[in-house]
Image (cartoon, rainbow, N blue to C red; front, side):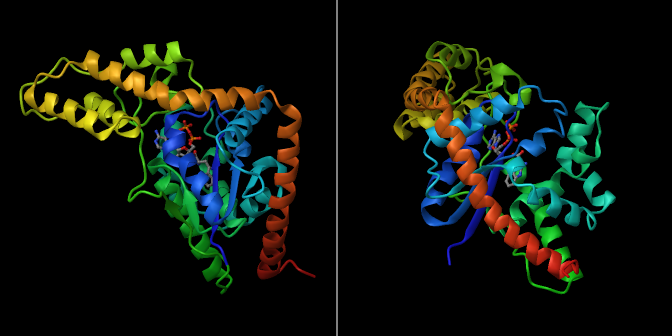
Length: 330
Ligand code: ADP
Ligand code: TRP
């Protein structure tokens, strides 16, 4: 039996380099080797965007990107979360055994509560429960995500184990965060802070369909520092630039800039120029494929319907069994 893999991305905008290297790149290989479910987490979007006027077009956009970059609906199950309402039923069951204290301690909740103090809704608090429902719905064991999702996966394991203990079954397996490298990935943004993120503003992210001229401008304006003494350690913004080089530049190119940094003679203008060139080489084919796929509405509709059907088969089986375990069967 092949392992079951589940992952999703929220349709809050276009996919960026962080989404690609943190999550999506793994999807491509996993669809060849496992029983994989990749969905678009539109229910999750409501926790931060309660009336998302353009949700439909954002969902469409991510679906087009999923397909354009290589997900094959015959090799894996590609679906939209809200097309599978069994997700919501499992979320309800798991919510009955999720405790306020543990939910309030989740870092992403604390951060969101700080950034949207007027909308600390129950969905935000139970975000990790909905995420666990997504994964356990297909009894997933491997979850390809970036480093920022590690704590959410820990919660998913807690909920899976608690369910098993409570009903004295060994039904849900323990899901773990996964990446094909040795560690989970964190791609930095261009503005000198932590991870690349849409919420850090336009200048922070490199989108997978970024126009050549915009891409160049963004990279040339990326935050660096004012130079260093020979042998001094790298500042955070400079480390970020090296981390981005590591994704798209040749090892010898990186080594030469490393040597310049060590010698205290590095010119960040040159480094950024090189990074911009290599990034354009990487992005150009992705941009073309995304543009070509976006216009094909009919095909995207068919793919969504096909995926929903496959995902519901798996979800309905799980919910039938879960209802029986809890004691709702007649
Ligand atoms: P965003 O943070 O831009 O809103 P999501 O939260 O929807 O994106 O993330 C979708 C997937 O992409 C998750 O698996 C997440 O871990 C991954 N991801 C997002 N940003 C990064 C990043 N900067 N580095 C690595 N992985 C990331
Ligand atoms: N929370 C994830 C993120 O913000 C998105 C997500 C929702 C997800 N449900 C999931 C990821 C299930 C993996 C599995 O990136």
